[in-house]
Image (cartoon, one colour):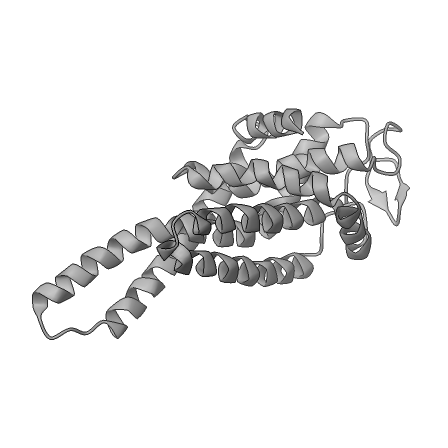
Length: 237
């Protein structure tokens, strides 16, 4: 598990994934900016006070809150980004680390977008719930850590597995190895606590789950030469 995490983390910053990392980070930053602007506009609309100095104080506190809240919004933003760049990351990792095995099949764009949007909503709701628990010291951090470990590990593992399996098979595989997948999620979440570094979460999480999926369930045709999978069969490149 730890060796897979170390390998994945090293690949994130290697020339192998540098291009997709830059695209992923740029998109995640853009999404966070849009979300911050929306929250700030809502705050200004709701907080109309009779004294200018109170408006200024609310604006300052709101700005600090947005900065702190970005920690909670990053998982949601990264979940939306993941579906758009998963296949690029997974294919690069597969070619580099498993050159003699067949490549997975890219997911249809429509399915990837719908899955990302659905998961984005779930992660956003969970993390906003954790944000409201700030008044309970310690509890919100625990909820944030455990919830994101489960949600992110589930998302990235199933997306990696679906390159070789149907959605139903990918879900069943995750459930059969629920403990290992969750433990891998615990290795993803610490990145979320580090400002700026947390923007690599989609690329790192995807690379880690590609390695985990290969270790838990070898793909059909592994070791028989590289080539795409079509309906479970390997064809020559």
